[in-house]
Length: 90
Image (cartoon, rainbow, N blue to C red; front, side, top):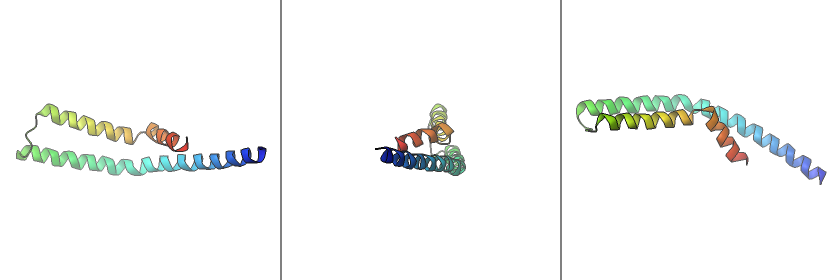
């Protein structure tokens, strides 16, 4: 029994280490393109409002900006990567 317990702990440690490093690397890799995509989205949205193609009230546009900003902050946070690592390893 001790042999299998030792083997399991070795494999579990190796998997947890690799997933943790992958998760942190993924967050740092994706943060900049997500921020750029959000900036382009809001620039295009602003031009559409100026053109008159979108006739939404300002409150709705600010709420939409808040939702996108919150999603961007949550996806690029370190706590999110720790959450993903816990889900994958447990």
